[in-house]
Length: 91
View 1 (cartoon, rainbow, N blue to C red):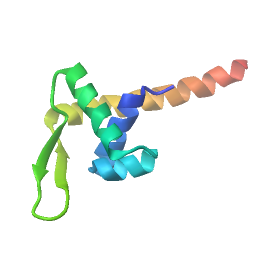
View 2 (view 1 turned 30 degrees about the horizontal axis):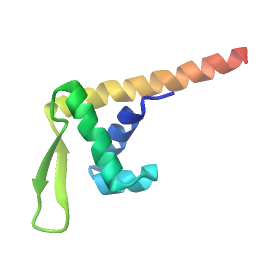
View 3 (view 1 turned 90 degrees about the vertical axis):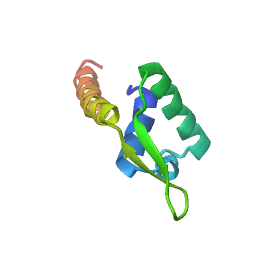
């Protein structure tokens, strides 16, 4: 029941890697990037700082807006788990 874009965002924030989040979610890396980009456009803010590292790939970190959204996204996910648990009582 969790919003899928928020789920993708939470995975990227937890892994601090689009590639690793894609592996965890069983999605392609471009699909993960597209979901995050769409969420950033919807929110009107950048959620991750993307810096090219000297090694392979790039280094990412949450922006301040990303940290705020992550706090609320985690709370929303917990709320949905509790709502599902309570709703199952009536099934």
